[in-house]
Image (cartoon, rainbow, N blue to C red; front, side, top):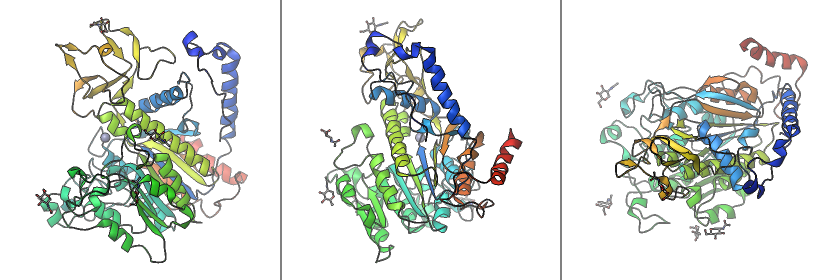
Length: 524
Ligand SMILES: *[C@@H]1O[C@H](CO)[C@@H](O)[C@H](O)[C@H]1NC(C)=O
Ligand SMILES: *[C@@H]1O[C@H](CO)[C@@H](O)[C@H](O)[C@H]1NC(C)=O
Ligand SMILES: *[C@@H]1O[C@H](CO)[C@@H](O)[C@H](O)[C@H]1NC(C)=O
Ligand SMILES: *[C@@H]1O[C@H](CO)[C@@H](O)[C@H](O)[C@H]1NC(C)=O
Ligand SMILES: *[C@@H]1O[C@H](CO)[C@@H](O)[C@H](O)[C@H]1NC(C)=O
Ligand SMILES: [Zn+2]
C-alpha cells in the first residue's frame, strides 16, 4: 500500500482563507509529487503472484464524474475542502478505461455490461449471462447461447464465492454471475410473459437458487421474489407491494436450505441484528435478504434492520476466506445508479462514498500478496458538475455566479436529462428558492425525463494486487474477467501458473520479470 500522503487538516481555516496555508508553499507540492514518484518507481517490481482471492467492486453507474464528486463529498464529510482527498479506490496503483457499449447499444445498460465484465463476452442490452445471439425478451433465443461467469469459474476451481449487493440479489448486475436470461426484468415468474414460461425459461430468482447451488454468500435485497404470491413480508406486514410474488408457489428460501449438505451450517437472515450476531467461523453458507426489493439508500437506512455495504462485505470476507483455496467476491454498490436515475445526486454520491468505505475495509482484511481487487463501473450517467466553483465549495452548492442569460443562480451539479427539469412560470426555476442541499433534491436537467439516463463515455477500472498491471490502457469491458481469471489461474489461459506460486515470493525471478514486461514493451 501507499504510505499515506500528508493529510490535510483544514477545518475552520476554510472560512478565513480559500487556499489551505500549506498549499501556498511550493515545497508542499514538490514533496507530494516526489513521494508519488517514489511510489510509481517501485511499481516496476511487478506483482506476478497467483491471486488466491479476487474481489470485484462494481459501482453501478459510477462514471468518472461521480468518482470525483464522491471524492469531494468524502473529504467534506471529514471537514476538508474535499478536492485533495484520496478515495480508497484512488490509492489503487493501476487505472484503465473500460469501453462500456453493448453489442446493440452505444449507451449501455447494466445487464449487457454485467455479462461483459463477469462472463467476458459482450452482449445485448437487457440480457444477462447469454451471448449477443440472444435477443432481449425472446426466451426461445436463450438455449445454446449461455455464457458462464468468473463466479462459476472460481467455483469450479474449488474456491468459495459470494455476491453482495445493495440492490435485489436478482438485479441485473449480480444476476449475470449465475443466471442466463433473455430479460433482466424476469425477477420472478410473476414478471415473465406467459410465452416465456411456456417455452421453459426460468426466472432469475429461481436460477439463483438452482444454477450454482453452493454459492457460499448471497446478500442484498429481493426477499419478495423468493416467496409465494401474496405471502406477507416479515418486515412490512401491511405493505402489499412487499408481499411474495411467485406464481409457482415455491418458497426459494426453503429450496436454498434443502440444497445445502446437512453437516454444513447454512443461515438465512433478514435483518442486521441477526447478521451481526452470527459467528462467521461457524457459517458455511449465508443468505441475507434485508428488504423485499432493493435495499434502502445509505442515507435512509434503518440501522437496526439493514446492514451497511461495509458490514455485509466484512461478514462475507470472513466467511469466504476460510477456504484455503481462496475466494471470488462480487460486491455491488448498486444504488449509485438509482440515485442518478432519480436525479438525486446526494443519494447517489453517498452510495458511492459508502462503497469506497467498503473498498477500504476489504483492503484492510486482505493482502496485496494474494488478493487482486478490481473496482469499476458498468456505465456512466449524464451527471456533471462545473460552474467555476471555488476550492472547497460544497459539492451540492451553487456556482459563484448567476447565469448571464436568465440571471438566475445554478447548482454546480447538473444532469443532461432527468426529472429535475423544472420550469416555473415559463422560466427555469430559481434554485435559491428551494433546498438544493436536501437529500432528495433533484438537480436541474436540460431535458425533462422521468428517469435520467445512463451516459456513454468510458468508465475507470482501478486495480491492485497480483497481475493488476494487466489493466493498463483503454480496454473493451469484457477484457476485465479474463484478466481476473488469469491472475487467479482459473481461466482458460494458465500459462504462467506452473512457475508462479500463490502466496510465495513477492519479487519474481529476473527471467519471469522480463517475460512479464515483454508484452507491455510491445504494446507501448
Ligand atoms: C421465437 O418465438 C417468436 C415468437 O415469440 C417467433 O416469432 C420466433 O420465430 C422464434 N424464434 C426462434 C429462433 O425460434
Ligand atoms: C393475491 O391477492 C390478490 C388481491 O388481494 C387476489 O386478487 C389474488 O387472487 C391473490 N393471488 C393469489 C395467488 O393468492
Ligand atoms: C431479526 O430477525 C429475528 C429472527 O426473525 C427476529 O427475532 C428479530 O426480532 C429481528 N430483529 C429486528 C430488529 O427486526
Ligand atoms: C441508528 O439510527 C438512530 C436513528 O437514526 C441514531 O440515533 C443512532 O445513533 C444510530 N446508531 C448507529 C449505531 O448508527
Ligand atoms: C432568485 O431568488 C433569490 C432568493 O429569493 C432572489 O434574491 C433573486 O432575486 C431571484 N433571482 C431571480 C432572477 O429571480
Ligand atoms: Zn441504470
